Amino acid sequence: GANSVYEISIGLLGPIGSILALLGVVACPITSGDTAFRSARLTIADWFKISQKGFAPRLILAFPLLAAGYAISFVDYNVVWRYFSWSNQTLAMISLWTATVYLMKKCRLRNGSFITALPATFMSAVSMTYILMAKEGFRLPASIGYPIGIAFAFVLFVIYLRALISQRKKLTPNGN
Image (tube, rainbow, N blue to C red; front, side, top):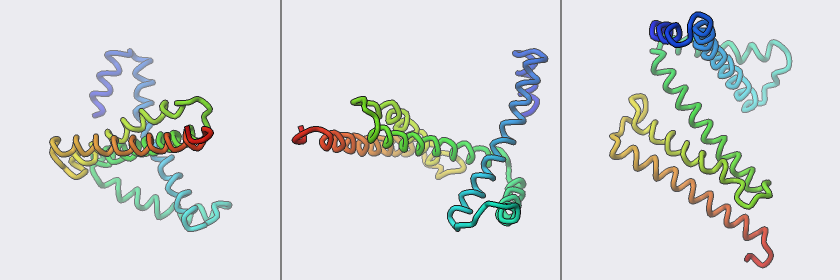
């Protein structure tokens, strides 16, 4: 917890470095929470076609979200943080696959989309395996979680390869 952050930062970084480290430990969760609330508000506004111009429409969505955040504050933050971490990793996975599709369609380099497809595959295995095995997830044993996570990533990579091959056939004359 806080004591270990203090001890490590003072011991390794000295007084000035420890101030920066402590600011990071405080600032990062605050900015992450701010971003999460803003993203949730804008997503809900988009889903329900609620304009966010003006102060009143923002408050109408912000108050219920802040109330939900307040309710979540009574839950053990270690659990909340693990869900938050998993959701960030899953978002990274989705973003990498999205970038892969974009590069497949737009990149002139022959294998340019591999630069995002390989980390996307890795993140797919990590995200799936974590939620299958974690205490806050499905609590499956490693003998089940790892193979399913790896199989999930493999299936996504095969789908990617098939799409890449299909894309190349469309781009070459006579499909060769």
